[in-house]
Image (tube, rainbow, N blue to C red; front, side, top):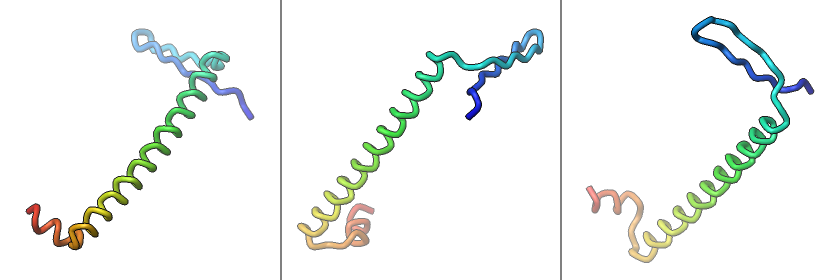
Amino acid sequence: MTTPTAIEINCETGIVTERPLTADEIAANEAAAAQAEADRAAAEVKAAADAEAKAALLAKLGITADEAKLLLA
C-alpha cells in the first residue's frame, strides 16, 4: 500500500506541493471514516425502525399506505 499524500495548491503562486500525510492526519482520516460508517449504520437502523413503526400504525388503523396518502392529501 502506498503512503497517502496531501496535495497543497498555493492559489497566489500556483505552486503545487505533494507531501505524505502525517500519522496524525492518517489517524484523523481513519477516525472520520469510522464515524461516517457508524453514522450510516445508525441511520439505517433508524430508517428500519421508522418503517416498522409506520407499518404497525397502518395495521392498527387498518388502512394501506396508499389510503393513508389519500387521507393526508
